[in-house]
Image (spheres, rainbow, N blue to C red):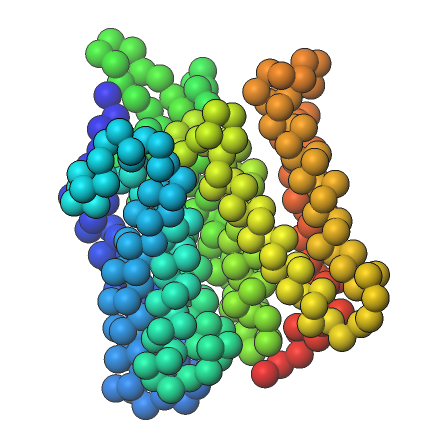
Length: 310
């Protein structure tokens, strides 16, 4: 049986944090011309604040999502315990974003400058945190597979036989690495932070659909919903700052309405409530919808001048 390896998970998270601190320090050294000592302090402050606020954010959002469960469990038991299945990954992301802002404030940087400097390190941390789910048993896995191999699937031994489950956490980690690379490509752009956050959240709408574990409200996955709403919010911000007048400027955000409706219908189909739609076809359409939103994001950024260098 595949069991949690908490020591292994903590070691990988600690090594990942050190690596991300080094990336943050390098960004400060190269992009903000910080002296070496100040750059190291900048990276260390981000790692320390990110660890504390990331954990606090992960527990807080889980608490908000699962109030009914916590009512029976007791808030005292929840806040004094530390179980990986009682943490929200995206609450952790929110906590790290707050840590980015506070780190910048402590070092005298404006909010946008700080967020843009630190977002590559944060995106790398997002990817490594996903890969670390390898040590958390079935937490980051999806559907049962007849036969497969790592990194496509993880093997679970049950005595004399072995089962295979889709390693969704590996796909999530790889897609987060893509967002990390994009953050490097967008170096110096005014919307670097928002663009990286968009591409961290957008593919997770698909990945959260693949995961069997996680927070659920009946058939609704609130973390999947949170990722989609984050993308909508970013597109809406682009619309507000594009400098155009009238309602036509909001078309990128309004395009999310039919996209949301289609994704909801696809989730119903995947849940068996709409018969006749094969699972591969449903996922193919979902990927196409999300790819369309990525194209819209690119157009929206150009309209608001987000590709202009700082």
